[in-house]
Picture 1 (tube, rainbow, N blue to C red):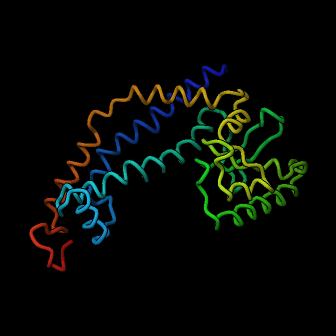
Picture 2: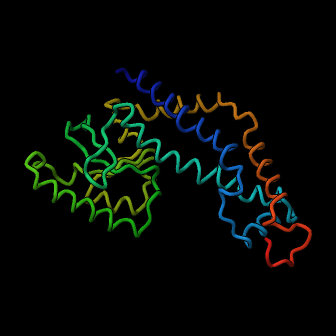
Picture 3: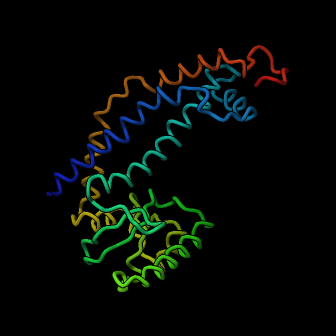
Length: 246
């Protein structure tokens, strides 16, 4: 498969499985009050700073936009990308616990077991030691399997989907001392075999995004949620002294 063909496949996958699904959920899921766990103090505060008042629209905005612009799309991105590598035969699902995918590294021609991460700041300090321990335990187990006896630390990697090497957090740099952390351009080179694949993919995805038509889905979703909030007995917008209501 050529670089252009693979790029087109990935762009189509993004469009159908990430962008379109997200836009669908904006109206079908995130517009429903039952999909939220509500902090009554925070939601009143956010409504006040957004609308300078405690209103159904203020509450809706406080709940809806952080969800659809943050949690929802980021969760979908991480899950779908892992599936994408397998669905498009770029990699294989890993049979080893804790690893997301397996693939033949196109630079050194060695098989790699990879844990995928989205970006250069997507782990915390407390994640580092458990991740290294998991890798070490996995490698020791793998070495008891005669088919895997040649594996070493550099065969178990972290693949960071986007970003530049200088953007990697200190947590990733700590992991990199034991197990390679490949980010952005280098990761995509190793998994596809095309040196400039990452930059080309980003460029084509930007073109795709520019052609998206959200059809006012965000506004409609927020309006639907506001109407449900307005009619819900959970809220009291006429007075703030009823303990049974928010």
